[in-house]
Length: 331
Image (cartoon, rainbow, N blue to C red; front, side, top):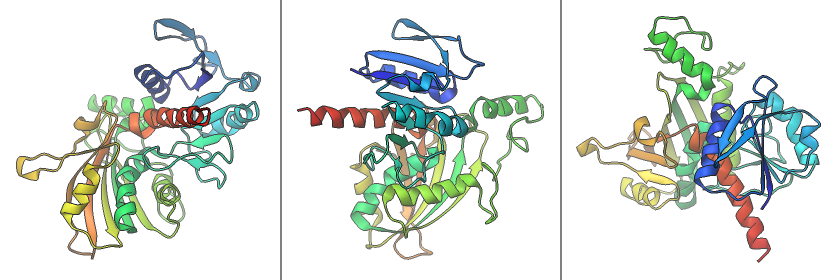
């Protein structure tokens, strides 16, 4: 039994973390909830108890915790995660603050395990998480040469502000979060544009895919699009494998892979959709077909709940992974 803290407990992802902790019956002896000063004092019900959310301060971050689930943005994480770490906690951080640091683990439990060079573990980008889950078994079986992503990302990926822009847009109100209306529209613009023309979101997917799969020379490209969907991201993946494969072999590998639900029966209009994955833990994969324009290349379509597998669930799965490792080390 250990002391657990959740930072950002009143936000969309933090609330989901608490739901997952409850559903999975994660064992802990003490739970502390933190938020910004604005949300401090909020009462949260968890497992029949009332918890009062505390303001996160530097003094609080030096209290003894075993694990900290951090979901409060990059700036907050940069300031407080090292303080929790110095006080002995293992921090599982949902922000992009540390993801590409050489000494920080970037973890998707179906794909890789922490090495703990430091006691901060990064949760990858939501779209990267759901994409590497099917890519990993393909990499193991056939090897990977190239990956091209096109994402269709739900507004909940922008938090409450994104959801408000969609609902307000339906009422004819101007957006306050996105640069253009998202209602009845699609925005090929997630995060800020860089000098190379890619957005930071696209660059995250490129860089994180190589790091998680440990294939630094993998050719990866991405286009990320925000669409007027409440929850669950969809990703079109075009993948070139090194060893020749058939569609049937690709399906077979994915059908047996951990964390994947295969829905691929186009004759009966059965394929993954956002409505399939919302509220579900798994990554849904289908529309598997040969890309006739490139050798050894295939199209995949996958959907996943961006607040669950893309954020809160993945973080709790990392916590489970650490707990399991510690339990085995004491056997």
